[in-house]
Length: 304
Image (cartoon, rainbow, N blue to C red; front, top):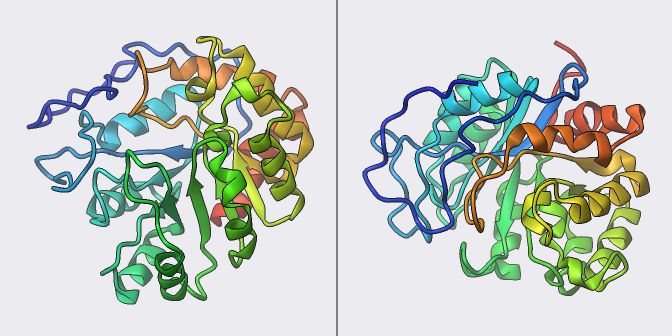
């Protein structure tokens, strides 16, 4: 694919924010119609949508046009754009992307202490269907129960899911918090589990227990983040495949494009799509993962 020319950010990127893969391969795997990238980001351009002054990292600009071009190359027709902490609770960049999506996009918001109900309802009208809680210290101080309850009160009645960004065994300490959440919860990136603990480590046991509750979903994205082997990430792919086989009705997948706060170069997004053939080798599971589940979770129509 040919990437569009975009303006450079006015700030140098932080360590761990490499440019996207320069030439992602064309996937050999043909995805089902209406397949969804259920986790991706839009950054800037900073000259139009400035980054938050209190951000903990600065990415390279990755505007909506760049994301849309990648999705066309990969065979993805739907997407869920996740508001990044580098933009904070200023959702103008997300609203702009959703407004350009022609109904193909949904959003995940970051609700701040001063975000009003009126602003939340505007986000809902634009296509936001979830909000994210970051528990990773490099992104923010983990939210308190009081802060979580405040957000839940302001989004009450909208049917939004809660998206949880945790790392490893944090999911075990948060298990009671997750169970107490009203409605549906989604755990990002396989909970960023530590593969050294093995498939039956505490974090994986907690993920399976939460899946058993019926209200918790897991994103089997981020195999490149979780793997200890590097491409083609066989160790993390096996873990993701085990979750798809365990609860095929409550898993979704995303590219995590453009891959910030990582070690090394950005992964080949074409490879990540091809790995779906191993993550969900059963065609019925692949359709659930890429079409049916994200449609249910993020309120997409059954067909266009």
